[in-house]
Amino acid sequence: MSTVFTKIIEGEIPGRFVWQDERCVAFLSIEPLGPGHTLVVPREEYDHWIDLPEDLAAHLMVVSWRIGRALDAVWRPARVGQMIQGFEVPHTHVHVWPANSVEQFQFANADRHPDAAAMDEAARRIRAALADAGHGSSVPQP
Image (spheres, rainbow, N blue to C red):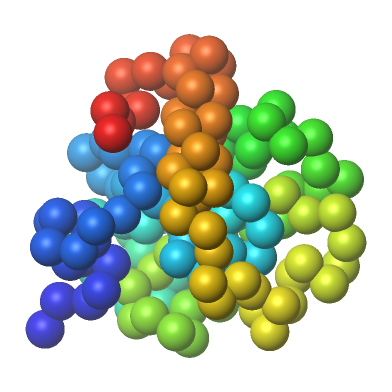
């Protein structure tokens, strides 16, 4: 059975994509820890990140780094958080988000009902920052 992330990747469920390449995608979290909270997800399903092939794990980290730099350019947070925990969806995904306090690393503080217009604007801003950084070929058009 496909995971919810595979359904998003395949277009069965809508997603706010900010990155797409042959190996992975990135889209906004529907329960963000802050504005711009992005998930970097391999196209192929791997339940546990330690089961990823080494080259795919490295690729996910590079894409996460690029997105982290874009988030930093857009929001200028104190830190850009990154986490892999994988309990809620059995499909490896890297969380990347702007953070200004340690409280923003706690999923209990996630926004369960984010404003759709604000999410659309965050995705637009991330895509623009990625394109400005020279990654336009991996930036999807909405």
